[in-house]
Every structure is written in structure tokens, then in C-alpha cells.
Amino acid sequence: MEKYKKVLRLVKERNWKEMEEWLHEDFMYIKETALMDREEHVKKMEKEFGSKQAINQNELLHEDEDMMAFKHVVTQKNGKKFRITQIQLYKEGMVWREISNAIEID
Image (cartoon, rainbow, N blue to C red; front, side, top):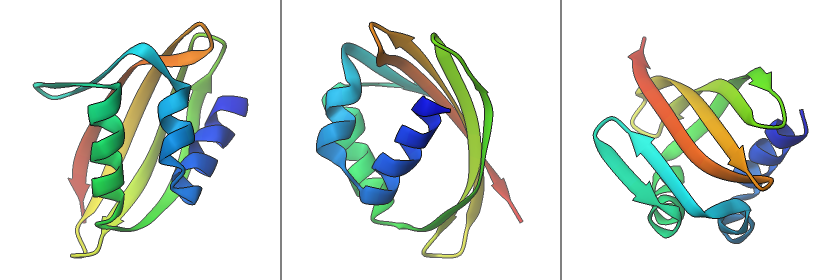
């Protein structure tokens, strides 16, 4: 649970500098048809987390030395809720690839 606790802490603290340092120099974030590099991903997270009121129902699905899968529910300030599932792959102890899926829920 070491990686999972780190993700939760970084998001809670909004520590974008440490987040960027944890991303591998070849990091790519994959979402639907978009690809983002390390810098683009951190900027997007800073912007997105400004519009999120709550992140809850955190659940670690799997973690080992090579990957981690987790999910949570995000409630935006406008009241919309999404179930987010994320998978991270690691290289040299850093997040190398990340993919997520957001499903709107009631």
C-alpha cells in the first residue's frame, strides 16, 4: 500500500511539485483518445482539482512493484459524480504510464 498511500497524500496536499518528480521522464497519461506527457498531466491535475469538491470511497484494487490499480468517486462542485478507475505502471520506481476511466454515476 506504499504507492497508494503516496497517491492519496499527494492529492490531499495538492503537492504538484512532488507529484511531477514522481513521474518518470518518459511518463505518458492515456485517457480515451488523449495522450499527455508529464508536464501536461500535472498542469491538468492542478486545474481539475480546483473544480472537485470531494474525492471519496477510495479503494485500492491491486498494488505490487510493477503496477497499481485503484478507484474512487469524485464529486465536482456542480454536483456531478464520477466513478474513476486508474491504473499506473511503474518503471525505475516511478510512474511510467497511467490510464483512467471516468463513469458518471447518480
